[in-house]
Image (cartoon, rainbow, N blue to C red; front, side, top):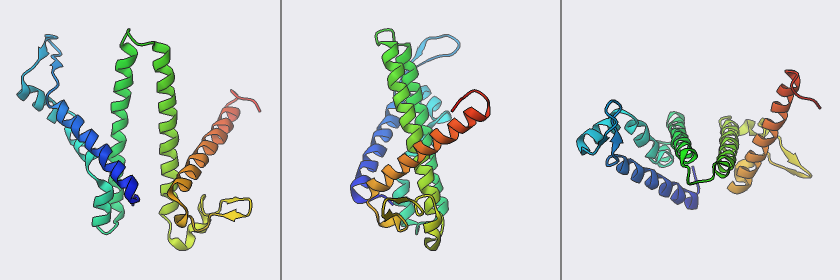
Length: 194
């Protein structure tokens, strides 16, 4: 579960995506055969309901709160993965910006690279942290974060550490893992050098 201040931020994000769903019921679209804009609200709504409405709606549900209410059952926790579908929205947004000749293409590509890199690092960090939380509390000292030692400090009881510190540790671990494993695979395939 998220702490109270992040829970409110999560709800604000859910409301923004819920607003996006409402807007999609009113966005005209270009007909595939005639290339005319379709303004009929019934046809717009029907097209959206047939395409991505279900995934968008499930992605807007407050799964963290549902997880707490349902007694912290693991299958409910898996439903958070539906939110990854939002990455498609961000990709579509950047594709539209890349085609816009009024905006510098190089600038958009650099921003897109930064966003994609951070998103991949964030997702990997969240996955690594999730994997560390799936073991019983008695075995948490054997996970990647539980066995971590920096100087004299050990993270064996990592759930007691501040959430931001755990997040930064997860980002650090994901970056180090991607860099070292990626470098290893590059070297093993013959395309890299040490």
